[in-house]
Length: 349
Image 1 (tube, rainbow, N blue to C red):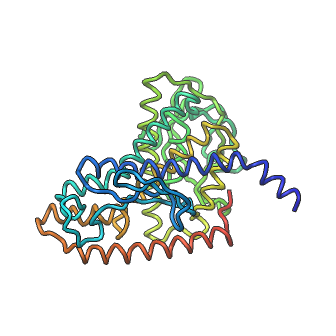
Image 2: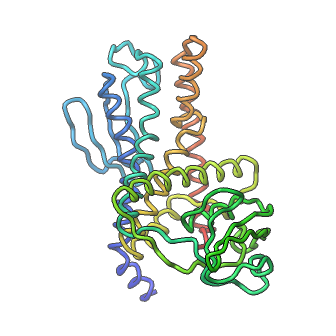
Image 3: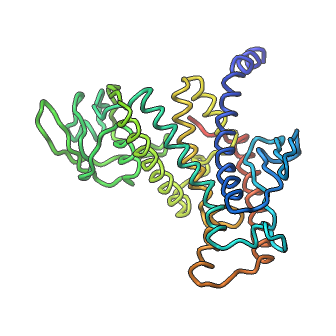
């Protein structure tokens, strides 16, 4: 027990860094909504970081800025968001395009944050080149003839410049055969191999380890890396949600706020650039999660507003409010379940 207490005390700075990183994601997301509210003349009564009971707040000219007890999520409370308002500055009385700009701004800001963080990571560390360092015995890679020192240049005719790009091709392969182009002794070779699923890690592997050779980046290369990495992470995230909706993801693959803080703490221990990289990953995932077309999420609003714009038919504000309220209650119930799962059966990493 004493050792556990000592470990917790030792990790307090890293836990604080993890909480700040997670809070940054929420602040940036809600700041996107807030700024577009102001640009579109929508009255905002509350800007909240966290959920649950109020810890403290600062009252502005018309907006109260709040910090709440549970550091999970946040919100911008707009006038007329739930319908029934006659205030000309209410969300209800804005055009569908104005509403669309407001509800989509949070996800866009998360993607912008990811690009910026990835740029900093690229400038600080560069990226790992796809050069093989070690091949495991009896692995698909060894059976296919891959050797240490080989540099991967293409997978299924897709150019590969970074190690993480190669890993993404493996993880999304679904176990199908891959055509890999490598360079060995300045000669190009083509190799075919089929990834196998590892029961413990629940993902596809080919049995190789990277050499760890890094490429340093100049400013323009860092900017390109920031955009490329954001796009790559978005593709992986869409792939994950696709597998989730098709029932190909188990409870062991899903984590909640506790898992996020645990992983963030470990990232902080590994260094600032590692924490920045993980925060960028989470920022992309948060942005994409919020555009899922489910009531109470930004994606639910986007879906309804696009319907209004395309059909020219205005949805009943009161009904929209009821639908969003039901969606919010379902999300809160799911959040409780995920937190309980995090405690009883935490993610293994």
